Length: 163
Image: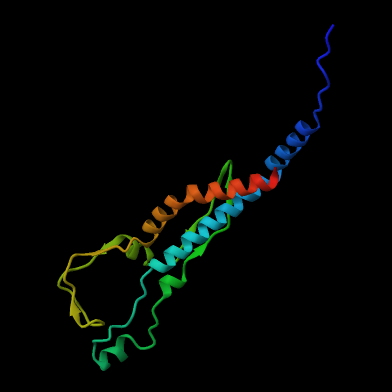
């Protein structure tokens, strides 16, 4: 009878141990860190795209004192926040939130009554529709384009570190 030789299973057991470690904790940590990084990048883009309201510089001093005294723009821009990461089954969910009541009107646009006089700007409204700025929508599209490359690099680095 011929002998087949000796087999050393130590490296296979070590590989199994590393895969178990990856499955138990490292992968969850990886997903949470990647989600947080993507959300942070999205938040940065959204804040850059969010318009800041300013008092018109061409209005007279009386109107400025009456309607614009103490006005500081930037409320919408400063209000963007990131929620906590929620794991729902195999899905990691994180939300970008702006609690300002008019955020959706700036994002998607809104109707306005054409011809109505607005004393705060001393003008009549011209159009019946004020177009949206789509700061969140455009930022989401940009992040979705970058996401595969970013996740691939992070996953490759994690696997390199692990193996």
